[in-house]
Image 1 (tube, protein in one colour):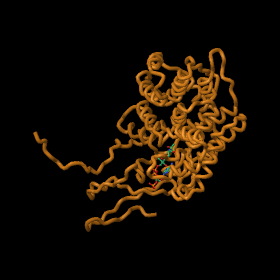
Image 2: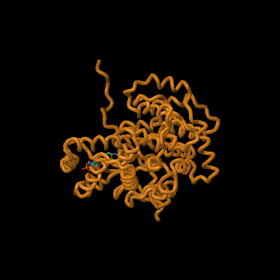
Image 3: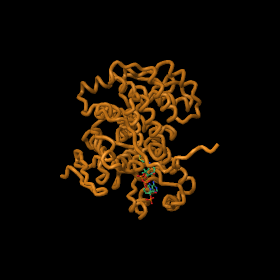
Image 4: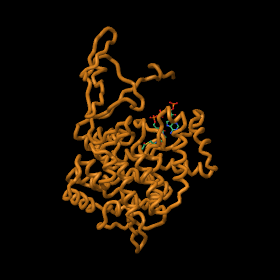
Amino acid sequence: MCSVVNFNINGYHYKLPVIYGTFYEKAINISQLRENTGLITFDPGFKNTGITKSSISFIDGEKGELLYRGYPIEQIINKCSFIETSYLILNGELPNTAQLKSFSEKIKTFNHLHKEINKIFDHIPNFYHPMGILSSLTYILDTFINCLQEEDMYLHLLAKLPILAALTYRKKVGLPPPHINPNLDYTSNLLEMFFSIPNKSYEQNPIITDALNKILILHADHEQNCSTTTVRLLGSADTGLFSSISAGMSALWGRLHGGANQAVIEMLEDILQSGGNIKKWIEKAKNKKDPFRLMGFGHRIYKNFDPRAKIAKKVAENIIQQLGISDPILELAKNLEENALQDPYFVEKKLYPNIDFYSGIIYQAIGIPKYMFTVMFALGRLPGWMAHWKEMKYNKDPIGRPRQIYIGYKKRNIQK
Ligand code: ACO
C-alpha cells in the first residue's frame, strides 16, 4: 500500500499523503496542495472528493452494498425496528433491551409541541408544500427547546418531527391535530398520529407497520449525499442542530434527491394516463434534447444496483399482495424497470432503479399521499442527519469552505 503519491509540477517534486479507509478505499490528501504548489483541485458536484472521515455508513457502489455501522442493510431490515436502527446510527452500537427501553421512553417524554408552535402552524396556508412546512417548523422548534444535555436534542427531534408531519397531513385532509398514544411503539404511534379520526383510534395492521418500519430503515443513512453534506456543512459553521437539519430537509426536497419519490409516482401516473407506452417514455428519457429523465433511475455511487431498491421492490410487492390491493402502478413500474434494464442506454450508463423508484408505491399502499412522500423520507433520514452532525462536531471538522475558479471580468473601473 502506498502512503504517498509523487508528482512533478514545473520541475518541482511533491509528495502527497494517501489515506485509507476500513475497506482500503484510498484518498489523496490534497489539503496542503495549494500551499505547496498554488494549485487547487476542480471537482464540480464533489464527484470525486471526500470531505470527511466517517464511521456511520458505508456504500460499495460496485458491489451494491450498504452497511450501517458495519451491519449489512439486508440484516438490519430483517432483524431491527426503525427505532433500534436510529439508536444504532446515532450511538454506534445496537441497543440492548434496557438501552432500547430507555431510548424509546425518553422519546415519548418529548412527544408534544410547544403551544406557540401550534399557533404558528395554524397560520400556515394549507396550500404550502409539506416539505416547506416541515423544514420551516423544524427551524423554529429551536427557539422552544432548551436542552441541558446534547443527547436530548436528538430525542426531541425524533419525537417532534413525526408530530409535525402528522399535523401537516391532517390539516391537508381536514382532520384535527393528531392523537398521540404513548403506549404504542414509534412506528405504530406514527400511524396513529396520521390516521386516527376523532374518537376512533387507527386500527393497527402488522403488515403496514412492518412495511413502514422497513421503508424508514432503508432511508436512515446513506453516507455523504446532497442533504447529509448540507447538514454537515451548516454544522461546520457552528450552526445549531435544528437549523442544520432544516437545511438538510430543503436539500432533500429537490427532485434529483429525495423529491424523486413524489416525481416517480407522478411520472408513472402520467405514463399510465397517456396510454402506458413504456417504450415511448424510455426514448424520451434518452433524448438529450428533452429534459425528461426516468425518475427513480440512476445514482451517483451505485453502478450495479441499489440494494435499497431491491428491498423496497420486495416490500412493495409484499404489501400490495398481502393487503390484496390491485395496483396498476406497481405493474407499470416493474414493466418499466424491466424494459429500461434491457436498453443499451441504461445498461451502458449503469442506470438502475434507486430507492425512490419503489418507495412511493409502499407509501401509497400505507395510505400516505404523494405530497407527503418526501416528508416520510425526511423522517427516515433524520437519525442519519443527526449522526453526521454529531460526528462532524466530535471530529472537529473545519468550517466547509470550498474554492472556485473565477471566470468573470478582470478588474475594471466604473465609468461615470
Ligand atoms: N434518465 C435518463 N438519463 C439519465 C438518468 C435518468 N434517470 N440519470 C442519469 N442519466 C444520464 C445523464 O443524462 C448522463 O448522460 P450523459 O453522460 O450522456 O450526459 C449520465 O446518465 C450520467 O448522469 P449524471 O446526471 O451525470 O449523473 P449524476 O451522478 O450526476 O446524477 C442522479 C445522479 C441525479 C441521481 C441522476 O441519475 C438522476 O437525475 N436521476 C433521476 C432522479 C432520481 O431518481 N433521483 C433520486 C436519486 S436517489 C436519492 O437521492 C435518494
